[in-house]
Image (cartoon, rainbow, N blue to C red):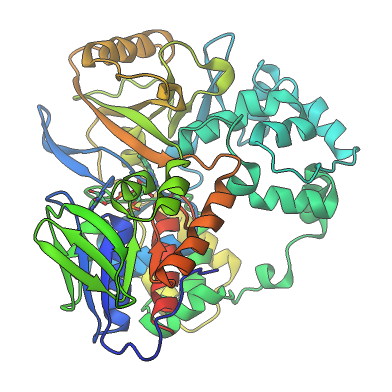
Amino acid sequence: MSLVSTLPSTVQDANVGVIGGGISGLSFAYFLGKLKPNYRIKVFEQSDRTGGYIYSQPTQVPDAKSTVLEKGPRTLRGVSEGTLIMLDLLDKFQLQNTIMGVHKNAPANKKYLLSPSSKKLVQVPDSFSSLVRFISDPLGRSLPVAMGREFFTIHRGTGKEETMDQFFSRHFGKGLCDNILSAVMHGIYAADVSTLSVKAVMPRMVEIEHKSASIGRYAVLKALFGSSSKEKSDKPQLSTSLAKYQELFSPRLDLGKTSKFLSSFPMTVLKGGLGGLPKAIADNLPPNVEVVYNSDITSLEPSSTGKVKITYKDGSEEFDHVRSTINVQKLGSFIKSPELKEVFSKVPYSSVVLANVYVPQKNILPVSGFGFLVPKASVDESKLLGVIFDSEVEHSARPLFTEAVKKELTSSEVTSPERYKQLGDEVLASDPVITRPYTKVTFMLGGYMYDNENEFPTSTEIKNIVENTFNNIIKSPISDYHIEVGSARDAIPQYNVGYLDLKDQAWKLSKSQFNGALSFGGMTFADGVGVPDCVMSSFKDATKLAGL
Ligand SMILES: Cc1cc2nc3c(=O)[nH]c(=O)nc-3n(C[C@H](O)[C@H](O)[C@H](O)COP(=O)(O)OP(=O)(O)OC[C@H]3O[C@@H](n4cnc5c(N)ncnc54)[C@H](O)[C@@H]3O)c2cc1C
């Protein structure tokens, strides 16, 4: 649900300011600019480039003209509303041929966890044999009994907001969080399960507990008596937001059908890197949107005329609405309101060190897969969160929109489940785009474990961690490699216990102090931390602001 206040109908040719030229700011400006050609929209970007954390850097390597090193996000995961909208935007910008998918049966869809005692990589089960291996390892050993016990017990919370750790330990014992869920949270939020709020991160689980008192029972009943007729229907139904997008932006592809087709592709990537997405939006902004680079905002406050005043290095300007998409601690450094400053200061952010590693001419990874995550039980002094096997993803990815797929997804005929499967299988069986052997991986380190550190590890220390990990965990010694170490400082907001209250307070203060003329997008106080969440929040809020 959008929390944005629609602009009063008395405001005709509105001036809208957007803070931040990452994917959130760009997509918000794009949607609003298209919906309201009479509005004037100014995007303030502090640096000299758009895209924010999305940054695909072409890099020279000895065995090819160049390769792309992703310095931030690289995949769009799962079938989500935001992903569907991004795919449609790329289609509109004539870039459909850059969209690639990793099929659920492709080698790169296997995932691994680092086992605590053996320091071996254990595959997350995707078959009976991998399940047997998983529950034979200390990682999964406690699971069968824990799940059985959960199934036969009634679970009720105390009504107090709980951490992920508290909630899941109540249901399944400590093992699930320490060995499995903590790894997933390391991968998404670089955060600690003992501080993350279950209600903020997995609200559905709290709802299920209210309804069924057991997650296991709910899952079994759902599997047996299952999905609603809406989910089963061959003619897919659109959510309210996607139906609105369809009405306002007339996508060429049928979004409902595309969503069914994409259910075989848990990962979407772009040829040339995810950076192609913000670049495409920036290149296709409507004429009523202007991007001001190297803008240095020094203050933001309500103006005497009931608008929002932004002061920046080239002067000051008043806006009918200001959309912030940046880290709220940064916003707090120049917003005048002491109450909002205080709320913003209470949202912690985690920092991640990234090391992109490239080995030319050979694949030295002994297993196929997306990579591995390190659960809390396996964390050591290296503070490694996980390693992504980029070369595996690049070798497994296939162009999604073949002629046959396009024909099916643009036709008005109902598509049968068998046909969706057949199309997915054909894409999986198609020729790979990249055939030359090489190894490319990204190490992610730190997150909440750097919270009390004044300095990040040096490049030499990171190099040692990389070499030790290849020797002792991946079990494949590494030599003659290219490495680039970088950091994403204060990058990911921590949705800790109390975060939802802070979000509520921030939106209420925007109403009382700015008359609703300040809104929040991006990773904080909006819909989530992933790129699809950010784009979806931009779409919903732009339409609400425009009163559509
Ligand atoms: C290491 C890492 C890996 C990730 N991997 C994935 C992934 O694989 N898939 C996924 O879906 N998501 C991933 N994410 C999350 C993803 O990066 C975010 O969803 C997305 O980048 C958020 O975009 P944004 O525009 O909201 O913010 P940002 O990308 O942070 O953009 C904000 C922009 O605002 C600008 N700015 C900052 N301060 C000011 C100021 N005072 N004035 C003007 N401009 C300012 C910045 O320069 C920047 O351009 C990852 C995040 C990180 C850190």
